[in-house]
Amino acid sequence: MSSYVTRKTPGDTAWFTHDRFGMFIHWGLYAMPARHEWIKTTAKITEEKYDKYFKYFDPDMYDAREWARQAKAAGMKYAVLTTKHHEGFCMWDTQYTDYKCTNTPAGRDLVREFVDAFRAEGIHIGFYYSLIDWHHPEFPIDPNHPRRDDPDAYEQSKDRDVRKYAQYMRDQVRELLTNYGKIDVLWFDFSYSKDRGKGDKAWMRGKGKDDWESEELIALARELQPGIIIDNRAEIEQDLWTPEQYQPTEWVRHAETGELVVWEACQTFSGSWGYYRDEMTWKSPEMLIRMLVNTVSIGGNLLMNVGPTSRGYFDARAEKALKVYADWMKDNSRSIYGCTMAEPDILKALPANCRFTQSEDGKRLYLHMFAYPFGHMLLKGLAGKVEYAQFLHDGSEVLFNAGGRQEEQVEVNKDADLAALTLPLAGQDVLILKLPPVKPDVLVPVIELILK
Ligand code: GLC
Image (cartoon, rainbow, N blue to C red; front, side):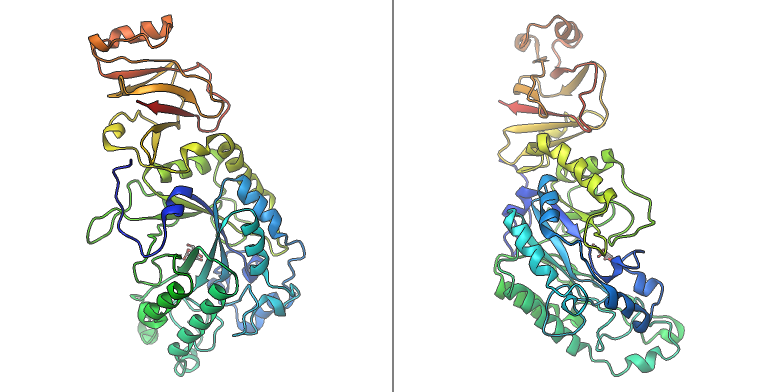
């Protein structure tokens, strides 16, 4: 069994740390300006001007079953959809505002179709819910707000009551966690309580757990969905730590206690969460696979984001990226699901430009080759510890020699080349894998090592 013990979580994270890989979906009115999901505030668009998106939002090509099919093929075992992003627009038929998809040309409950389609594919359901709301009349203007630079921003904001907004959030979270069956993940975003306005805007305050009334909000969520997994962005530690847009290089730890925690890196295919037509920094196929392997190799989950178009489909670039995952995961998902960071003594054997993952039961070790070596791979310290080795993608045997001390020098496979390789290393505690000179046609080849 894995020797790694993580900090106890309030929610049921067992399935989550087994499944490892999820789809994030950022979809809302911001898909229409198609220039990042923060466009309303970065361009300081007024309500009147932003309303044209409300007026014309018509995802006539939305087919959640197609989304779910692509997610499943990509090997994504859970999916988190933005039910409401910072713009305040609601993607479900909420009773607490008219600013919702059923009042646009869409004319239907988009969350309902997402839930039904992804659940039908056996994918766990997650809801992203923005704590920030640039549309709500009781949400005080602050340093992130689209109206922050209005000359009369203070006048606009001074009578707003954030407690009324906190109640609105509880009402909406109650709807979301009552009307759509079992919800597995609740993803709040985000707190910025240390932010302050400057100069004549010094009255502006960031917002955190006291503004959101996070204790009550989280208690409500857990009362309605007892096993639910909740992230840490309502400014109260819950189940998930959530590094984003960077690649952690070590298993994330609790800042005070140093305990290993359950963590999930969320990343984008390109430079934007929401659909961004002219954004060109799309990650290469190799990078996409490496991000997943890197994350699992240090005990984390990866939530990879898609930003659908306002017509309701994944654009060709997103589909191509998902296909990269589908092609690799089809043969290699065994090195991801039910796997975690390799044991410390095993990690000492890690060759350069490679990553290990290891099955939770400790019996299977996966060697991911980010760079393909010529001829052979040396695994120091693993002599005599491996029973069988194969490429995961096609199940073809990988010949190896036990290496090991003289008395353990065993010709595991009658192979002259391997023997020739082994001789100089005889007596050393090293396992020598013999590799085909040509890299298999796999983005990141994986060797499965069955341990004794
Ligand atoms: C950041 C972005 C937000 C996005 C979130 C995803 O908070 O501001 O737009 O939804 O990351 O983690």
